Length: 245
Ligand SMILES: [Mg+2]
Image (cartoon, rainbow, N blue to C red):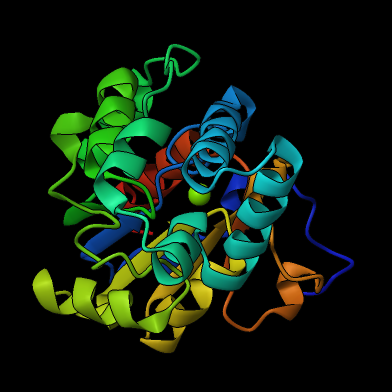
């Protein structure tokens, strides 16, 4: 691949033969399983800021600065709050994920594609399992997933720290060389690739997909494939796999 090729919206950019060996399909949740255009994470973002302001007695601007600093530094704002302020994760997670998910539309075609993929499907999120269940129910894909590996299962250590990836692999008996990870934040793919997983970056225009590295994804050795439309990509992979690649 070169920088000059690569039209952005090519679901077939990752030929299905790249996935013929895959038996575990690992999906990030927010802005991956549902489109970033749903803007769902904007609600979570506001609620995180409100929680910080209330818990630490800060005004809105100071709370927002701290929220973003911790997100960049620790992978989640919660991690920074736990380490620096002793914030309890349970009430925080319940509060920030208490959002309206009606912007998410049911995706029956995606559910069919997931059902047709050979192997297990697992959600790996820096959010809570409850949030993942709300989203999956709304999409109509809850029956298609074998497990949700959430921030609690990760012992509150978020992506892209390498440790929870190892925990995920061990807990679910995953052979990383037969797994693929699909994710909208490029840096979260680096530990997955280091373990030997195939990697697919979902490119979005959302500020919540940041911080992605400045370098174009083609220049990032741990980003193997780039897509913009997950349901379209899944349909293509299923079709190609059924054709015998
Ligand atoms: Mg995401």
